[in-house]
Length: 88
Image 1 (cartoon, rainbow, N blue to C red):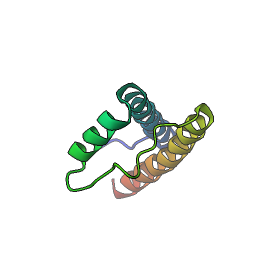
Image 2 (cartoon, rainbow, N blue to C red; image 1 turned 180 degrees about the vertical axis):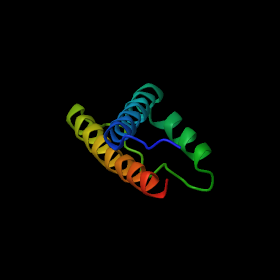
Image 3 (cartoon, one colour; image 1 turned 120 degrees about the horizontal axis):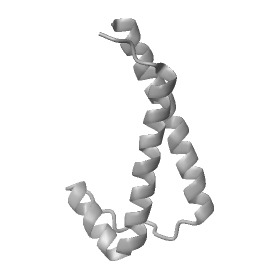
Image 4 (cartoon, rainbow, N blue to C red; image 1 turned 135 degrees about the vertical axis):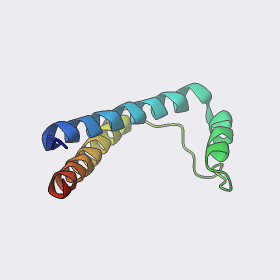
């Protein structure tokens, strides 16, 4: 088996998280509060999101969340590739 390039895997993991994060933000903006609560309750059966969902997320919060998501998942991706290469 080939080794993973840790830096590339980290960037790919971070990039994928940004796509998911922004996709979630877009869904939140398009659905509105009531539909978003219904969708969330369907996806996470047994939980009630009606008291915790907030749809008034500012552009700055979105940027910070996107950056934080990228960094977090890039680190996770790097660690996964590192462990994979050590076990390989």
